[in-house]
Amino acid sequence: MWLGLAGVAGLAVSTGCGRPPDDSEARLAALEAEGKQMDQALDAVEDRLLGSQGRLAMWNELGRRHQEVSAIQCKVADAHMAAILKHEDKQNQKSRTLKQQRNPMASVDTAVLTSGKVPTRQRSN
Image 1 (cartoon, rainbow, N blue to C red):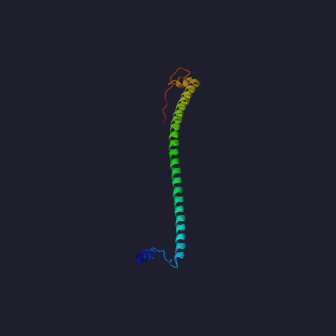
Image 2: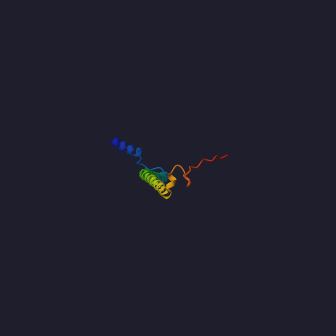
Image 3: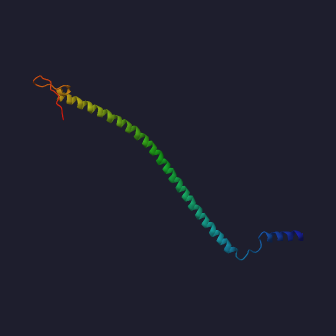
């Protein structure tokens, strides 16, 4: 029985159940302060990572929207350019028609003199 009691006492002393060292309070306070600093540092890193992920998601969304808008703009620009060219052709045709109506003789290839003679070509030196 004494042997068992001595074994239990030896086990208690070896596991730290005895009197703690004098500087244990200071070491515990330092470890707790260091733990708080590490928690703050980890929180700061987590905030930065979450902020970066948010910015990355925002830029990805903006890029996707830009592609959609660019595709729509290209379709609209193509249709607009085709309409502009069609309108220009129509205006050119209208202009030619009006010129022919104002000066019907302008469409004749040879000039006719009032005397009925065909003009002779003059040489230029």
